[in-house]
Image 1 (tube, rainbow, N blue to C red):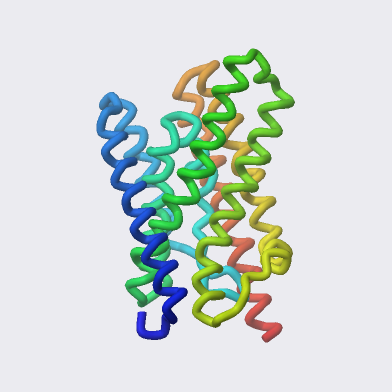
Image 2: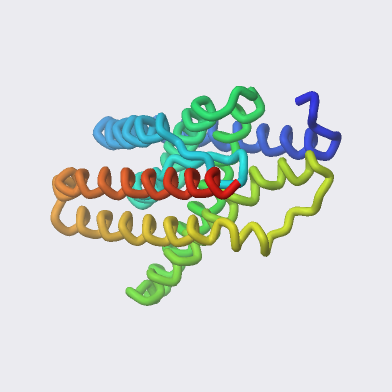
Length: 240
């Protein structure tokens, strides 16, 4: 942290502490789940952790992604924001360990993932519950909720780490430029939330085994996303 100025240091510690507290609360919360449900969360965490062993750096930045959003969103729908925060934090921790040698990234990345998942996840679940109680939870409102949720998650996943870099440089974070550069990630998050929602409702109708049956599709989707990210990274390096 020797290259952090006072503003960057204060921001990092605030985010790290807040994220760690959220993660601790999430871990405590999922211990109350029934054993089969805890097993599902554990399997999802292991799956996303395996994907995170092959992260790709976002072109033109020091930030990496692992493309495990579908599983994270599915865990959110099935088991709540706490379980999703744990899965996202594990993905972030492994991805950071694979791409960075800085301890600030090792601790900061999972903390930011927990914050992003908790804020967007709690907001989505609260809005869904409120609409359901009012009898206004229709297909249209669900699509709107999913869109807002995915965009909020996308925004937080990009703003939280990018703000660290901006503060270190003594610059203002250009949100418009950031949104343009990472617009492709927004599309990925929107598709991920839609796929996860379809899997969730299919599983609720047919049973859990349908989720296992479509696991190869999820693997193909994640591999495809990884390939596209790697291709973008290679093209950027060649242009530079």
